[in-house]
Image (cartoon, rainbow, N blue to C red; front, side, top):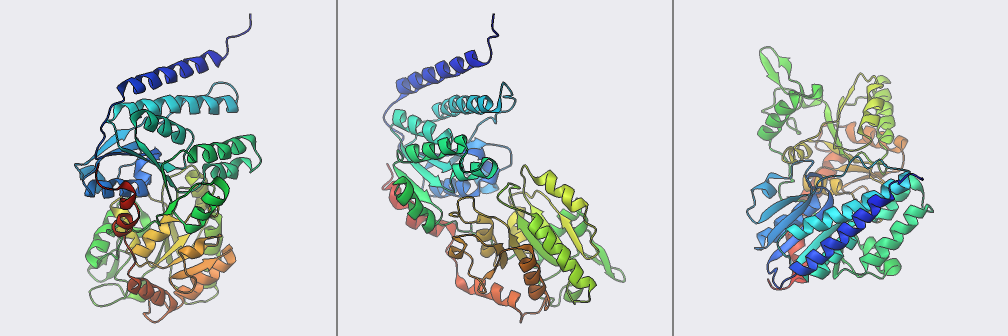
Length: 464
């Protein structure tokens, strides 16, 4: 007799899914006034835009169910908000049955049941606001739940799932083609759509026939330049775990952190010229960011110093969690710099804005898989009046204005030359770096709450 194999498990999943659908239909009722489900099939702590959505809705009196994985702690404003209830989704692991394709199918089916069950448990919402990607299976499940609840579905398009998948499999892989068909089909079933750039808005209409409204990422109010006392407290906190921030004696009987006030004015014990420059980047450590570009640029920067260039030492901080972190940490450990220190911490949500507001320059290596989204890390840096060097891709000009609020580069050599040019007069208030920072200060950028109220609130109409 042939082995039973994994297929009976598929029928169990299908039957469970049908039973959940019947139960959801049975529970359908009128109501849901003032309630919104904000959902992402990902880590809530690393989904700042969805946290911002939840806070904006709560500010307008909505009851919010914020649904997703609880791997990292969300911002304390979310945790303290009485109108926001966290709805955890258990992350799947251990589905190692049969070939990889079968594993993927099983995972999607199990996630469908799991997500639908979780949506079933919350109070009926009037809207389901869903992040895409990841959209498989969350778009279809959210649409089904909305159909049964009588809720309207809003998709917030951050990128395309199929283009991210193509980084590993290639554009012509069957899974990628199925994912594209899926996003196109179910994306059309939404009631409203938001997206992050005008380029994506155009692409959604031309290729998917989906009408969307552009809601640019904007910095939250707590992204701003960090006062000296808060910088000092942050560096002392980081010094407990990270060598580059350890205090050092700078004069007889005096000790301070490795960093001082950006302008070197009175009040700092360490002469500004003697302190290292603080370079910061953040990442999810995924395939759409090649950090070997930055590492090669730092090797060139070290060579510039060894050849006699009057450049400050660098402390390079790369924050974030993700699948490729161990790989890049392995590369970093093989580097032997005399004038550069690199650390890769994971910061609490409240500490990240403080570090950005204390830094001298940001670096962005995000290369959009679709060429249609913008890096939120740069938005946050600009909120802190922190200039950036960002790697080029198609619609980056919607955010980074070359030679105005930062510089755009195409390879490691160009980045190294930009670092040298920007830091040659560090920390003078007369150079390019200072000019970029001043341009950011006077630009008076729109903040998230203002942008959200103008763009999203009209979609919701009067409170139901």
